[in-house]
Image: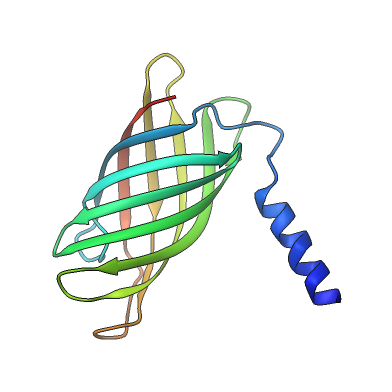
Length: 148
């Protein structure tokens, strides 16, 4: 019972909104990343299901076609438009049949006067199939058009 309570408390902390909500709901754009990662250059879409929790999907066309999904917790740095975020998720590669898990830590900025969002992040990957591997140097820059 105590473990269930602790898990519920942890989930509540993760999914409750912070004092400052993110100032956009959804965005789509392009991601440039280090080429060694399975999920690298490609299209990115981010959607906030809660004011401080987003889901990001990345469709990559780097070495092979890959799809990654991340759940991200955003935390404001100030009352402005800059936040830092962390999270994790899974990915799968279609050309080389790879799958694994990846984490993310980054900065997110939304320009107040134009519909532009920039993210700079570190996204290490752990591959479970094909060859077991770890890619610690995956860094990416994403520019997105803010929809709402």
